[in-house]
Amino acid sequence: MTASATSAPDMAAWPLLDPHRAHLGRALLDWTATTDDSLPRLCLLRGGRASGKSYLLAWFLAGSASHPRTAAHAAVPSDGLTAEALAWEMGRQLGYGPVPPHRLLNRVAADQRPLLVLVPDFHLAGRGHPDQPSATSQKIVDELLSPLVQFPHVRAVVEAGSTDLLGTLDHHVIDLGEASFPGAAHPSTAAPDFASLFGAIPRTVDGRPDWSQAPRTIRRHILDTALHTDDDGAAVRALLADPGFLIHGSTTAITTALHSTATPAPSGLRAIWERAAPQLSSVDHSDTERGALLHAASLGTSPTLSEYLRPLADQHCWTATWAQHGVPAATHSQLPGNDGRLLVSDPLGRLHTHDPATGHRTGVLPSPPAIRPSGIAGSGTDALLILDETGPLHPLTSDEEGMAATVLGHIASHHSHALLTSDTHRPTALGSCPQSSLAAIGDASGTVHLWSLAEYRPTPQTWRLHTVPVTAVTCLRLPDEDLTFAISAAFDGSIRLWETSQRPMESPVDQRPALVTALAAASTPAGPLLAAAWNDSEIHLWHILSGKVQILPLLYRCSALALTPTGQLTVSGPDGLHAIRLDLDRLWA
Figure 1 (cartoon, rainbow, N blue to C red):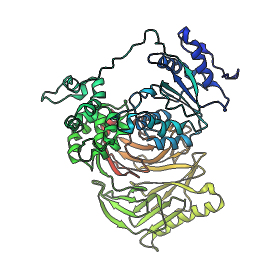
Figure 2 (tube, one colour):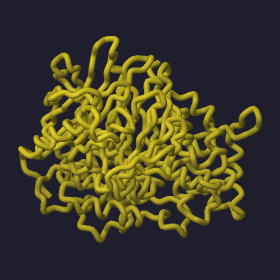
Figure 3 (spheres, rainbow, N blue to C red):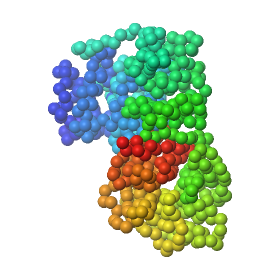
Figure 4 (cartoon, helix red, strand yellow):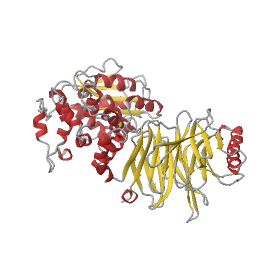
């Protein structure tokens, strides 16, 4: 295989390579750097045990960023991983967040970047009981790697060892032979014993296993060992019933065990784990945050587990307070007023009010059957402005002759007339300021329009903040400072801030290779706060005046946010309706 002279990387930019393997390094660089699309997009590193495959990949990764064609976008060691766990980590590294295999493939299909992914240790992949599909690498091939390399903009380097699972795909081979790499270690093949592993775990003062102090190798392997050696299932049941093990144990091992219906598990744990596992698989979360995540996932499903974890969750800067998993929502909004009721639209367009303290449904509002809301703003339950998912705005009032009907009808009519002139004027996002009767509308041209919902104004305050369609918008009024902010996000991954008495800020508040799906803002005792939900499973919280940022992991897909002055953040989406209490003092500590 040859690469064009202009694309060939210089091996001098890489670390020194063992002289006996310099030709293998050159072959790997030539394959990755070639621009010939007729060549296979899959490269297999073959070789015997300890032949230097991992060494070669580590060498390549150390210098990969020195050349555009060799830059690796994801490198996921797959020893002991399943298709699900591999997709979670690959999604993180590609900027999609921890997503399952089918959603990872959908995101890759929509991604415009040429992608290079590395999969070390594929020959060691698989987890669980030998009778389960997850125990072999074949499931990873079928669900992830095979469809991944069908995309013309994706190339993959896979450390295949001697396995031939990928041999049916069009591939290029770099063979390191059977000889052992000089100095390579040969790991012991002795199977661990459950009793010895469990006995080596430090204990708390009351004699319980202290999983936070247990060696990493024990936390990683003890459930696998129990599944293979525990005949009556007592050890497996004890591990899965121990909240400490759920927080500190191997997320992949627990996920794999719970996928089997033969695994004895506490009631509700499978549903809880399905919500929590993608985030718990990250090594970046602290023990306290892992406890907060598991507590959030258990709310509404296991009162015993959620109450047990509450003291640990309360130590964190955020704590989930309630969850309504059976209430999928298209959007929601906090209504003005002392009770701060939540107005929620379900996927069929039906409108319900919910108690913000518990999430319980408190009432039903009449709504036109043909509307599918994607945004709601209002000055009360009897005066609503609704954005339909197809673009039109609709006023919804109880008194068709009153002031609210006049004001909201004028806003909807204004944007309908603009839409007749050009599709770029189509509204794409609607946000409100619950502490004042303001609404912000973003459109397909990137323009933001700020309206009063309480009094008639012929035209809005308007500014084009983006050059691409707006994905989310909110506003914030600070009466003591006589300041009004409009905050918007767009398809280019940018968030922009506009204080309406001045020109907008020249630079975005933030810009990332992800999309903002929802925004909310509020004036809190700690200062004005902005919350942004991204489609890579993160919520970013900005202290607007200081610019400080805190990042929260998202357990649930988010289509709307609402934030109260006391620091309650409500999240809604296809997975339900959920509330988080922010510790405003600890958040910025």
